[in-house]
Length: 150
Image (cartoon, rainbow, N blue to C red; front, side, top):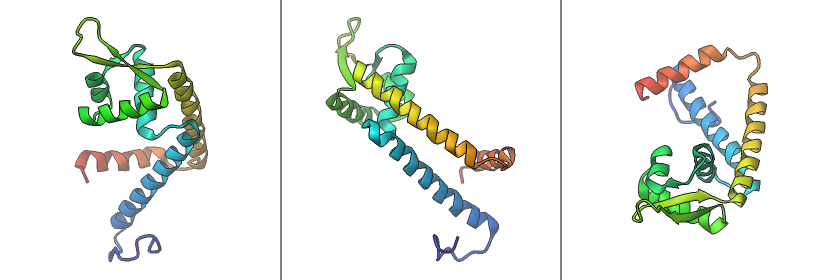
């Protein structure tokens, strides 16, 4: 552990655990992004397309922002990128012409499905590597960290 974080200055197990979790989270994010990259996707693009697939209908940008728990300005930029890729189109809501909807295209659906397959393969590999680990105990550790905000 000291090779990754040589200057933490502590020998407490909890300190080493925290830095191990930070490193593991970073590594998981890299693998997740790498799995999506061949499909022309990033984590946020995949998440947005997945929300549109799950909704089964076009979503307003406000709804999509709410589903992704991000601010409207971020969702506008994300939809701009998805639209430039040909993965979504913007539509005007016929019931309220002030509302802009994001609708997944056939190309977007194909890339979302391919991305979902790659993510599933990543999850399977992770599951295989965690065999023999007490996942209940690990889950409790993560729950405590999430509940305490530390």
